[in-house]
Image 1 (cartoon, helix red, strand yellow):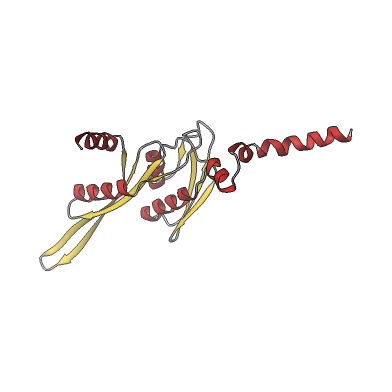
Image 2 (image 1 turned 60 degrees about the vertical axis):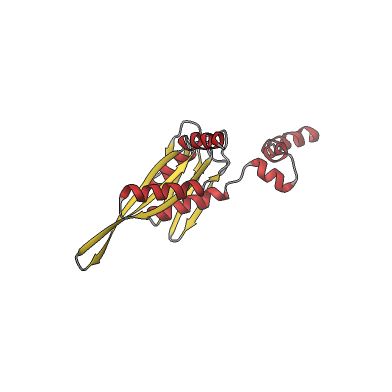
Length: 188
């Protein structure tokens, strides 16, 4: 039992925690105003797992703690290409927010706005280009980004769905380009 707890603790210490947004809200009462805080946190392992959470409390540290716990519980695995970028371009939506995410060449870096940048840094993506359209609300942007990331599929996943080999799925591009040359040789 103690060994399991040690392993779990060391796994949690490796997580990257990013505070995306803190919102202060006021409740007007008889004696004046009571302030509360809402925090939005993104947590990831830098190797393809990421989650987000929100927490509300009277104090900022407590709100951040609650949000971090929720983020750890809601972590999802995202397939990455070469451990640095996404496999294909995708769009995600949440409410009035729309995000467009494109894979990029090595050395491009993370080209993304605040809330989306936090998600990709925690996820471990190094090269990506993004654009947020519509709502600039950080909650909608993060949820839209997660909507898009959940649509991400790797060649291995597609090969499994189609009952084919990964080489058949990935190798198709090369076959299409080589086919016209082979046809010309036959006619000549």
